[in-house]
Image (cartoon, rainbow, N blue to C red):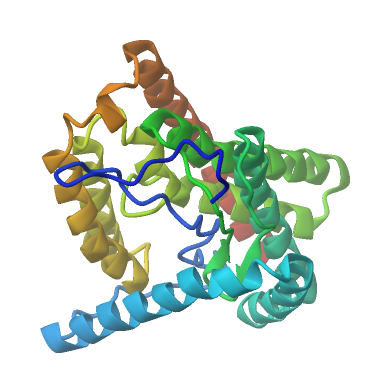
Length: 295
């Protein structure tokens, strides 16, 4: 953190939530419309606890390992991107599909990077994590919830624009890889709008109301157990989100949140809703076309 940074660590009794080491655009890889994803089986509590511990361990390695990667950002970005292209290509069966996924994730993450740097803070280029997305790392952090929300929404805005461009190019060229890129971009940005844990939606709606995090956890539970559209990783995210949700309620009257003016809260809420509606509609359209092409 620079000497001129205005950030002041929280005093006893004060809560300033830790800003995210922005995890990327695909915390949960979307299931391909070419394959049927069966409903997850409920394991025993010990298995779920083990998965939760493993997720926390991976998150710690990613978070604190970023301090080392800060010294070699260009190399780390390129090397991790190449590895991720290969990993996603194995999942979706095509090198072009792997490249499309990484490009969509990169566009999303660069939205965060641009906004962080616009606010005068340093941030690395994205570091890609196979099957999980990407992360960026900061030396300084916002001191109020509004600035943090602006960083949070910048990624989905950039990702939505990127997916829309891929969609328009598909309409013009009928190239199925562009359709796949658009589908992935719409779906993964939609997922990131969930207001849970460190997903972008949680940071966007944090100044509005902590009840949105309750809704985010509920949406994940419904998706997993009733709609069968998410993976076991979603359950882990929902479990991890419980502590951040409780903290949000405990600190709802903290100046970190209450300093955000009402017009800004309305703007954040309506922007979030607009993005969710657009991304949901476009993801549905793209998946329908992909399914028809696969027949």
